[in-house]
Length: 113
Image 1: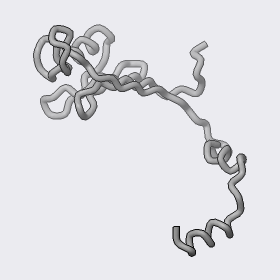
Image 2 (image 1 turned 135 degrees about the vertical axis):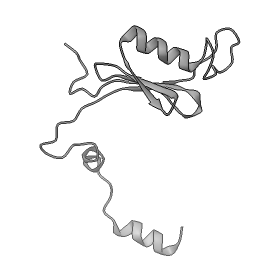
Image 3 (image 1 turned 180 degrees about the vertical axis):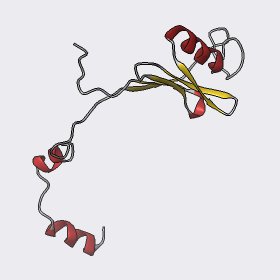
Image 4 (image 1 turned 180 degrees about the horizontal axis):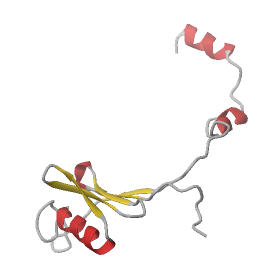
């Protein structure tokens, strides 16, 4: 640390707990929502290796199954299936590196009741 950095840190008022708390508060009048994102690697159950994109145990087959069984709308990048958007706003998408991401729709409460 240089003498200038040391002097600068001495001239600042100490950090208070309220300073940290305020960083997480929404501006007045803002209605915040919260959602959940979960990413997971997908393994081929027959080999134990990372699932490929193509094939009967591939990510494309899994996304097609999600679309069929959960009533989702397929999302494409050209001719590559990259995700499924469900009617309630949930998304199941293919991420870089081959993981699958589940994203819930943002809600104003953590409890659906």
